[in-house]
Image 1: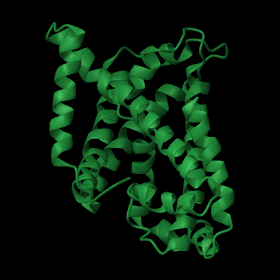
Image 2: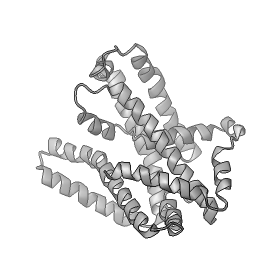
Image 3: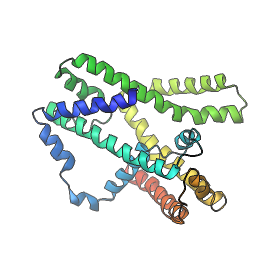
Image 4: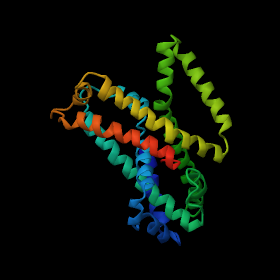
Length: 265
């Protein structure tokens, strides 16, 4: 209920933000192409890093959500839908936040804190803004909690399987570690540094390890067989070839260039 409502509220905000003085500068900032930027390698690294981060291509989360799928679900088309709707969500949120940033004179480079700085100002400009604001950030909280499912399940499952711990103990350990980490990254600068470390190292590295396992370590055809579940049309030879010779090298390049150029995503 809350996640579809999240999109509905963003659509409402989209209309309201478009009426703000100065919003047009935000649209120009978003959509006026700067072709010279394509010659800069960091542009591509940033884009690839954002793709890894936005789609959670770190291995663990993908496996957790995949484990909930029924056997008759088309994995390939589901993956395509994830990419399409993730991109639509990103564009929608950008069309709300960025014009609002220009309208209220905020810093475009402020990052995630803009959600909690700019949008409350937009709600203040709306009738029943307090109610909308409450529901909106309740939806944000629900989005964060549901994201924890894929973030926490891999370490919890690992503790259960490898350390033979009961589930309550595994959950308690992971929760305690998370609270300990959270206590040290409470301020905005620390959060940014932490997220940089995660996006530069952890997520692409996890994706690389998973891809090497699926396409190089497991028997030939293993990945295609798994992707074939629930799909009537056979998965073509392109699937294994792209996994082996495009995705794996590209992921390694993202990691290396991310470190060299100082950040991705």
